[in-house]
Length: 148
Length: 124
Image 1 (cartoon, helix red, strand yellow):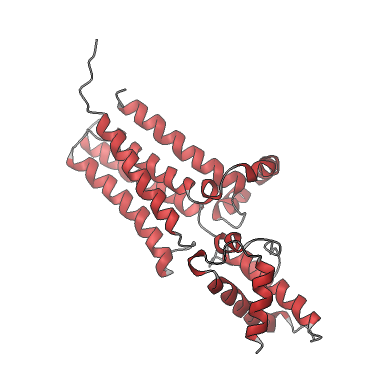
Image 2 (tube, each protein chain N blue to C red; image 1 turned 90 degrees about the vertical axis):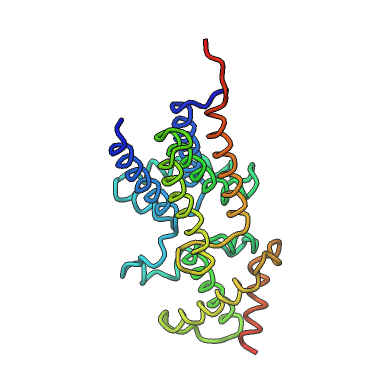
């Protein structure tokens, strides 16, 4: 199936949204986003969603809660940049490169104690898998597809 | 869409994605005076495994360590020090517990067991 720009952007937004939902429902409330939710007055809604989702916490393996959201964010971001630019153009590689550098750099920053968070090998592994998946899907977008 | 608009759109997308990334990071180092007063409250890792400890926020680990310190001081028959004197002890215990699980070697062990072991070693 050809991955046209619309499909790429929808898939990108959906994957970022799924990652965000995992964070909102199951991650610890010391995350900065919960301060933002308090500021905009939606923390009560978020807390009721979290209390509903709490009983489902144990149904997924730990990596779903800790490593997958970041990988989905990276995967979705790459697809969104790919949807903006024509395939194989210099600009597409430039912006995807910047984004991937920020993502991987912030992860290594955790190792060095420069950026907040906890370094974990599985996070990097998931990020690499997400980059490979996104680039593969992006390349598929220019495959020879017969059109009617 | 012209290239200029695409560049502007890409720049806005980078900013948006970075904001999302920042939002999913811990609220550490952003402590207000009210948070400073309550650094010892809200610890939830007393019954957790070390795997959860290693992935939890620093605030949560420190607050849990404070609870461990007060509990173990009580058990040792010592007087609980004021909060400002308790903090460096809790920080020492937090570091000791965290260092015990480098490379995930103690992932399946109880935090409380590791805390008790570290407490004994610290007080040796």
